[in-house]
Image (cartoon, rainbow, N blue to C red; front, side, top):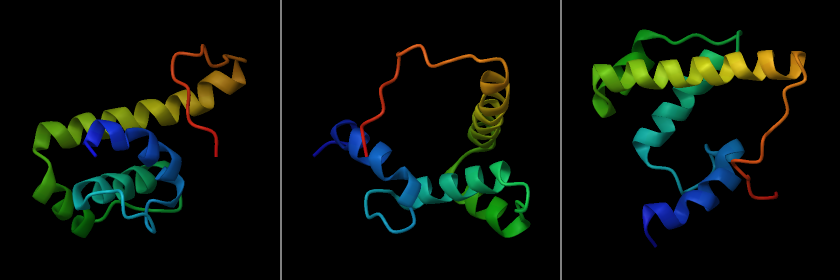
Length: 94
């Protein structure tokens, strides 16, 4: 199965990425990073940042950080103003 074909399976398992066998080491590091950025009671420490550097270039880390920050922004902005999904991305049902 190709990576593209596994995409829907990964989306369905992203909430349990730690237990799932579908995610690569790099993806797991990126997901840990995203969680630590998102949850205010967590920190991105030097150990995690060094681990990111093993899998991603500096421009990729900046892009990942921007993408996570933008999604966090939208998760607060859109519901507050009643902006609803436009149907462009349909997530698989759980």
